[in-house]
View (cartoon, rainbow, N blue to C red):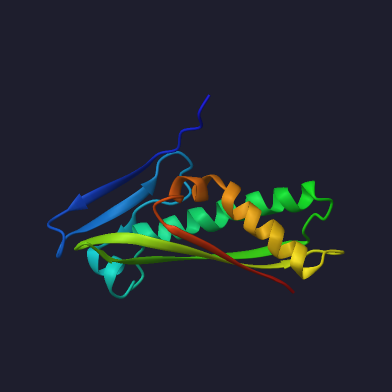
Length: 146
């Protein structure tokens, strides 16, 4: 059975001057997060954006996939710090998410840097959010053992 999660945005007004509030319906983890066009394309000013939410989804999904892969390889991580940088730009006149760069720093006892990078690349390809983006968004990973 598929896991279903829901979020709702209530938007008021036009694109340029309007605003919305975002609520995590399933978990209740957040409510009434403000979103605007300006927070998406200019300065965040304390508001979130679809791209920031995508970045958080990709970073958290990847951290789980990479932790699992490291553990299956016999080298469970002590810690991983994962950042996703989502790039939004115009393509053929339309705003488009063009890339997600994953940056991971890890503490993993008994693992060489080359193997860490190899497992990091494999986790990038296996993470469900990466799989959702594959073929549409350039995906990359930069992996460093600390």
